[in-house]
Length: 377
Image (cartoon, rainbow, N blue to C red; front, side, top):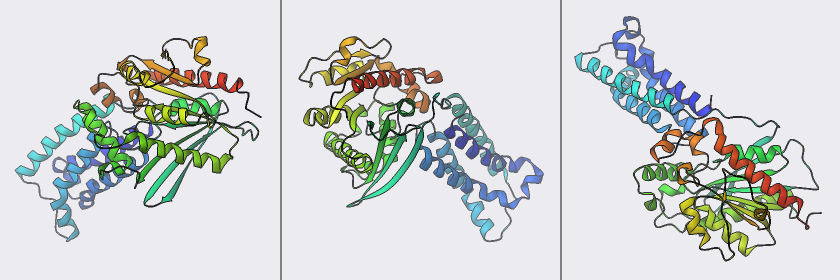
């Protein structure tokens, strides 16, 4: 059971006594139940801060806020020491209607619950570091480390995610890489991070705006007036500075990008061949056609559903593709935000099968490239 689903269930459980109060005599006289809606909202906010605002969580959060607004007058009565145990016909009818909506929210939460997170066979360490970068820019760096550090052979993979997805959008791939001896670095930026829109200056703002507009078929409007390539190159440079500070300048660094980050990753790799050892671009079939037109060298897509051909190891660029129904570019959305995946024409990634296929393809390719890297000490 995922942490997100546990958080959703906790919020929903807190609201049961509030909805049942008009119909259960013993609950009517429990004045403290009036405070449960605001408690549910606070818990929901903490879940958002911990897990991000996904479309799967949105119905639960919206219902908790609705319950808070509906019960606010009664809550004011409670704070003034007035009785709150009277429920007229209108209040009872309202509770009936809210109970129907509540049942729908519960069904949605259960039907589209995230896939349980599956640990890899080997252990890994994970830590997060929050930093103020100056000039109103805040950064959160996530570092996945192998169980046993090798100070002489540090291979680092920078995960650059789509601008509208969660920073840790490929946890299965990251855990697979770190359990096999690689360091994985991911980052999210808020505040003065290059975006012009106030909504885009927060990670959750970018995420929910992107999710809603994609569902309504207007994904091109999400960052219409933003220079995403420049912004994400800036993010990549900050991640590179973080790695240099942590590990020095002798590490072998690879980039793994998807979605809007693919263009920035390809540009950074072409401009800094001595810095980056290779780049993996995860893209759907349609997006690959656009990307391949901008790459000077001939590039052949490698289907994540098949095996890596021998020629894939000869190039410093790997294009992992799949049919558009796999929703490549949005991370492991089929297992982390199932509701959005279904609404976008995708499917539930049961048991993280596709996510693990992607992770193992990335791992195999980088391992082979790393073994043949003549610049390693």
